[in-house]
Amino acid sequence: MRFCLTTIFACAALALPGLAATVARPPRAVAGIRSVVRAGANGKLVRTVVVVPKIVAPRLIEASDVAEPRPAQAAFPAENLDIPEFVEATARKYAVDPLLVHSVIQVESAYNPRAVSIKGAQGLMQLMPGTARRFGVSNSFDPRENIEGGVRYLKYLTGLFPEDLRLAIAAYNAGEGAVWKYNNRIPPYPETEQYVYLVGRKYGQALRDANRKKEAVQQASATAIAASSPQQPVGPVYAPVRYVYDANGGLQLLNDQTP
Image (cartoon, rainbow, N blue to C red; front, side, top):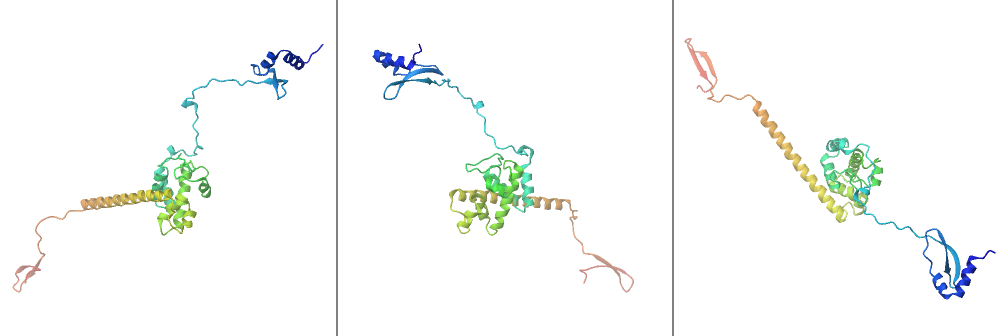
């Protein structure tokens, strides 16, 4: 005769109160093993499957186990590119002062082609994704594309604010809309004000250094020219002499100082 397991446990629980107290607590079970437990307010016994999670001992994670996130690989790695030379060539291409471009890069990323700001600006010239798309940059971590896009953006901004370079620099940091919002003034954002100051200081210093270098080259050139010129002999200077004959046929020597 077949007996219902639930009925047997129910009868046993009624006959032996101690068993009821024992069954009321789920027995220790192995994961995936069927067990009988008391459920609900009426104390009805039900068949269930208890799954015990497997406990895994903690493991110390080494630094080598953590993969450092890397941005998209540049098509032209920075180590294969003479960045200063490319900056100057690109600046001349768009008629932007190379010294200004260098000053912006120094403040933006310190020439780090993998730099990423908290706000998401990327690469050497710290292009925001939207700005990169506007100026045809598909990979901001490619130094060539980044410099090209950044210089084009600077050219655009200097054209918008031709009377005051500080406004173009401020717009590079905060956007041209922010400059327009404050009636063509530097936006009163501490970050933007500090940015204009830093870029302006580096650009001014670069201009002074360039002028001093130019003057030194000119002075050296003048000295070289003077050194290569034939030297005039040093000595007494005589007035030119003219030879004439007098009325008696005598030869006389005259100069311009002869009365």
